[in-house]
Amino acid sequence: MKKIMDYMEEELKSAFRSCGYDEKYAGVHLSNRPDLCEFQCNGALAAAKEYKKAPIMIAGEVVEKLQSQGMFELVEAVNPGFINLKLDKNYLSQYVMGMKLADKLGVEETKNPLTIVIDYGGPNVAKPLHIGHLRSAIIGESVKRMKRYLGHKVIGDAHLGDWGLQMGLIITELKKRKPQLVYFQKDFKGEYPEEAPFTLGELEEIYPAASAYSKEHPEYKEEALQTTVELQQGNPGYRALWNHILDISLEDLKKNYKKLQVEFDIWKKESDAQPYIADLVEKMKREGFAHESEGALVVDVKEETDAKEIPPCIILKSDGASLYATTDLATIVERKKLFDPDQIIYLADKRQEMHFTQVFRCARKIGLLTKEVKLEFLGFGTMNGKDGRPFKTRDGGVMRLSTLIDDIEEEMLKKIVDNKNQASEEDAQKTAEIVALSALKYGDLSNQAAKDYIFDMERFTSFEGNTGPYILYTIVRIKSILNKYMEQPSRTDSQKILPASGDSEKALMLLLTQFSPAVENACEDSAPHKICSYIYELANAFNKFYHETKILTEENKEQQASWIQLLMLTRDVLEICIDLLGFTAPEKM
Picture 1 (tube, rainbow, N blue to C red):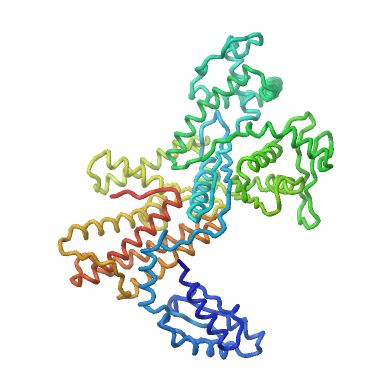
Picture 2 (cartoon, one colour):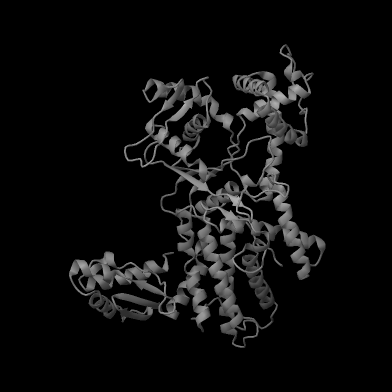
């Protein structure tokens, strides 16, 4: 279904051409003065220079051609050359009714679907998820859902860290604590135990203990580094322990991500790229891209146009060890082989921008991808406490993600119980979980990804203002009205949406027509905050209409049925949008 502004632009283009002007000046946009008009065309101002004529004269000629069009209720030329537009109410109601009947409410799928891999920059295994993992997960999930909604093939990859020093530290610490385990017996020839020699709780305690100890004891860190090398070279006992660590960690990670309603299509790991590294390094050497610098193997990626220094991309350290850049390049090789993507999106803290600049440039330079394949770094800011610093627990530690979720659920449960709208304690708990997730996700996603933001429990869980609970409360209000309407014996089955009977109804209709542009724009820019902005505005428009309109007591049944159809469309738009953001609405609140 074509966007409503496309239809308007067609009329404007025809009018500009009829007056002898280039149709490129016929662009239409939403008015920034809604008190004066709904849409605006400023093309006459730009055309004035080319045609050496006063812009108000050009605007006046175009307006005269548009006067006979039934699309507009108001068309006027305003100094110095603006063309102000208001849609005809009949035309608008017909368009809105068309949305209701169209697939995906009028959102057109892309004519050129892409294969897109989203790298969520997942956590390291053997460590519990903490709030530092929140943003990559929920931003990545929303971007994935938006792009799928427009018809792209999207592969979400958790891309876990499982191959670095943390593995060497864990295995070294296990050896220190339980040297009798068969995994450390060099002459062991049997089958290794199926059950891990540690629990998840023990594993989560082992890594921080080992990490802290290594910082004070260089010989211990050196042993862990050597253990890491032996693991990567195939030590069978270490590989068996590594598999235990992966199995236990993955089970816990999947449980926590499920609670966040974040789903991955593949659970690839850093180690999966290892088979590609040797050939990749050999290619870079053979083709003259890599050279030695202070003992390390590097690829120069600076360009003449750089405004700041871009250091070489280090491929191998002086001891021959690979780095994150090496693994990321090898992962591109693997993704090319498995998926042949048109685009790869990486989610990570914005402070890693230099790393991805180096990796992307290196990948291009050595020919891993054609120039048509887009590499995009979606860097995000930090979630901070009210003091403006990265969010911590009360004792100053890094907060577990599960703890944060539990705290928000507890806060929401208090508010829901106070409202006394739930039939049982079980219903209240389920509702609290749904609304808490909206508070957490919307609170994050409503901010532009690249910006830091303040986590404010009181504000995020409020049922008023620009919050997830407010959006859900609006949806629940609509559902309640629709349920009450369905109980009326005298209701009509009319599907017709009548022309708006008042300003607030027309404002609601106009915002509904912006659903398709809002989704397309948010998807194009990988910007969930644009969906948040749209539905907050839509929820406000609906609530204004609701407070001014006695829907359920309206005696004119045709008018009442029309409003019900409008409510259904508003509900559907809101529910699609929150699904794109990664959460759902309850039946009651």
